[in-house]
Image (cartoon, rainbow, N blue to C red; front, side, top):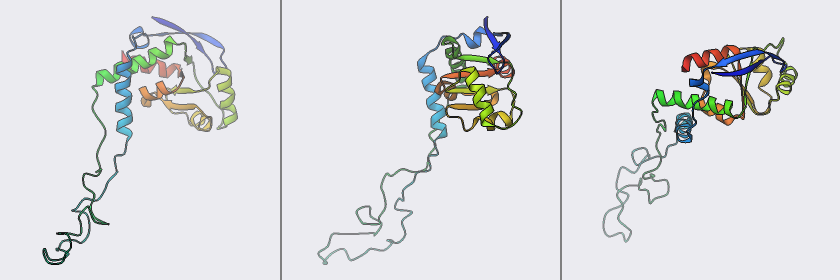
Length: 206
């Protein structure tokens, strides 16, 4: 059982919290993290690129000129890809880039991402965040107290004051525990969980 210090938002120690070893002390395997991150990034691609094929080009249904006797090359349609304004052959068409990754693999990758932050001492657990109003200056002071530079802050439930106060701080992202994902954990150097989020996440992943 991993026991870490529990802080308040001013980095004062207020106790300890036990983290489940099956969630926060898993051996990290780069190939699994890579697979899940690629799947997550691929699913975010719109895939709306498109070119016009012969069926989508207007006109050109009749033969431009007779087959023989004109001295020009044979032509059967103005939609030819050889002609200006003609079709594009084998061009990109709308598609989905998403590919399936099994649920157990995704859960394992999340455990590995969390474990990597604990192993490198970049995991901070805070009892709760309380901001009296929406003010970037207040959130900046909290980040300075906690020593946060490029950090992902995960809270148990939506806090409008917190998320709106943090949105203009470079490198700091706030999200609820339901939206926690492998890519965001790995792209931030530090991970901050409030006590409610830490409890909920480890109960879900056990």
